[in-house]
Length: 124
Image (cartoon, rainbow, N blue to C red; front, side, top):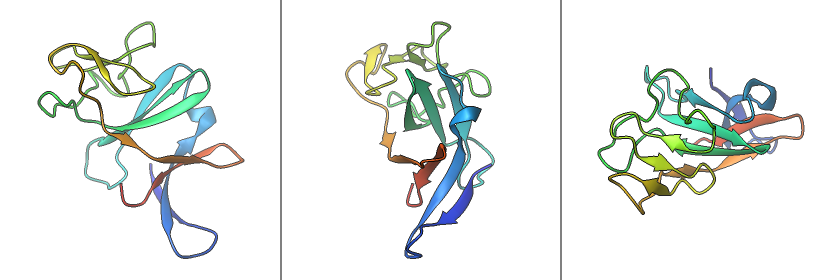
């Protein structure tokens, strides 16, 4: 569950998503930071790097996961849209195969604290 956490200077807030230990490498996980009842963003961890994207295919806006937290193919090297099989690079978010070839997922900014906690900017 995501939680709003005030920044140390008290002027802004960020949304706590999870800890690095809760995200396998390679792996993916969806989140509902605005408590809308469905995942609207997801994280991908690959080679000890973490990337965040909106859970929306650029082709028709479909949610990407075919089941809970299942955003990656079996090899863990591509993000796959369940609706039309589009495949995306997990690092750049760019579509490499499928109906939205050349388009990209919407990347979101993350902060990872020294203790390994992953945060999303509040305005996302």
